[in-house]
Structure formats: C-alpha cells, structure tokens
Length: 264
Picture 1 (tube, rainbow, N blue to C red):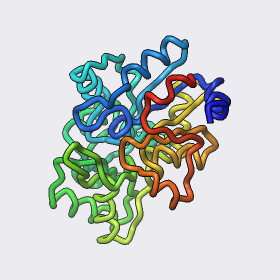
Picture 2: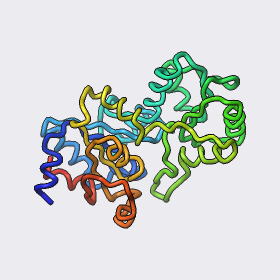
Picture 3: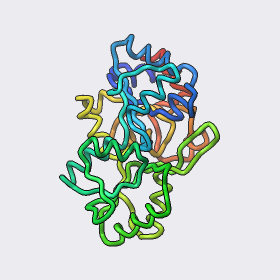
C-alpha cells in the first residue's frame, strides 16, 4: 500500500481539497488538517480549497477558516458560484439572470459582472439557497416552463452539518424538476466545466492535480470521469460500505486527510 500511495502522489503539484466533511465538519477542524497544509507547503507543493457550497463566497469561507485557526489567502478558495459566473459569461455573454440564491451569492454575482433580474431573464440559476422561499421557487418554475435555460451551481443533494444533513442545491433543483419536467445543467463538481476552470485557474495540466474529498458523486466523480487522480477520505459522507456499492472509485482511500502526510 505504501509503495502504491507514493507512486500515485509523488509527482502531483496541486491538491484540490473539499472543505466540509474533508477539512472540517461544521465549525470544527478535523484532526490533522492543519498539519496536512503545512506539510504540503514544506514540500513546495500547492493546495486550494474547492467547495460546491454556493451559499457563501470565498471571503466568507476565508473568515470561517480563520476562526478555526486556519489562515489562508483568499485566492486559495474557489466555489461553484465562481465557476457558474465564468460559465454564464462564456456561454451566454451579457445575460440577465434570475438567481435563486443567498444574499451573499447575489452580491458575488453582481460584483463579478452578472446582471440579476426578477422578470424576463435569459437564464435561471439555482444555488444552495438557505433563504429559499416558495415565491422564488414559483418564479423559477414559471420562467423554466417558458423555455428559459435552467442552470444549477452544483448537484449536492444534502449539506453535512454537525447536527446531520440539510437539503442542498440538488434537492432544491429536484423540486423544480418535479414541477417543470426540466433537468438543470449542473456545474460544480463533477462537471467538466469545473475541471476546465481549475486547470486555467492553476495554469496546470490534469496530471498535476489531485482531488481530495468525502463524496463519491462529486469529489471523486470529477476525477473518475475526467482522468484526474482522486483520494477519498472517510471523515464525511461516504463510508466503506458505500464505496463497495459504487461504480465510481477513487484512486486512493484514507481514513482522514492527515493520513496522506507520509506520502507527499
């Protein structure tokens, strides 16, 4: 096992870390997480965080990490919301967007040059909206029924917390799909759009990357489907029984992030 891990990780330059369930859980750092970051830096390698959670932005996540004793630069934090903004600009140009999202996501979209509207949108975008209302759902469904393209920041069904799971973006989209019969275009992990965004963001190749996370259908699937090395940690959603039943397989499995330290 040791030789296998060394062989897989020895030439990797960028470690793309999931956050909740991988680096921390709720508001608590998982044991060994800071030691992992220090070791990566000592080896002159790089790390960034990528979260599918679009309810917050990089500044908020930077502050959250700092409160847990982890001080990182803002550029090290990438979200599905950032990928979505780039996708909208590339695919729809100067479009008008009806956004189902938190006030923070609204502000982030506007700061990044996306025009948000309440009527006659060119695109409907749904994020992880912890301020969701029935009115927002009704308006999104109306626009989508009328033929407006339906985009989602990510496909996660549930968000892990210290008290258990809460409904995430994928669950909100399931409501809309049940009403309209329309499936969204999902971004975030495991989409190819997210991989392309990260390759450009880091100015690297697929061979330089490792995705590390706790979810098979997002963190691991992005590597499994696109030819990038992946490591599954068992500190979050996925348990060993889930792994045995899944067609999506990681390259490596460890109990926790810190278990990778001897091999980097």
